[in-house]
Length: 145
Image (tube, rainbow, N blue to C red; front, top):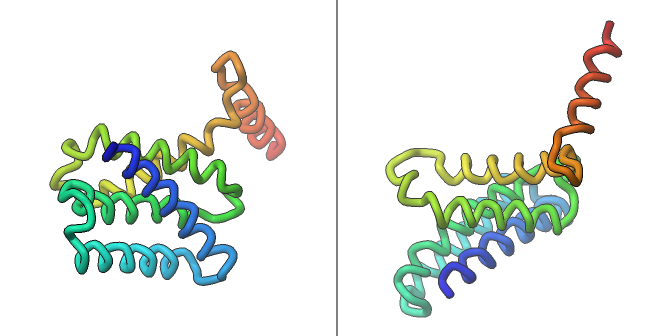
């Protein structure tokens, strides 16, 4: 149950940050920092609302999810792709959070990996082979000559 709550938190964080960034024109840093501050303050003031594990992890997962929401609309547009990236982030967080213990930038690294995974999906065809990505790179290289 805790894992489902953390996955939903990452998805909500990414989409809400993207919404505040793009629709309310607050900018990526202000959107991420403001929303993360609200969530962290809420769980600091009301620590007995949920289990201690959730109170400890929800703000961290929200911050990581908000890093995904900071992405430019030119790169990753659409709430479905943001949700997919947040899902990948939460899977990375749930399975490697002990591995990243003590390393700085673990949330940002996991968020960037998840965005890169979602960005690379169009380059895969149904058979799982890279085709269109290599074709695009080939066109770029040979068009400059």
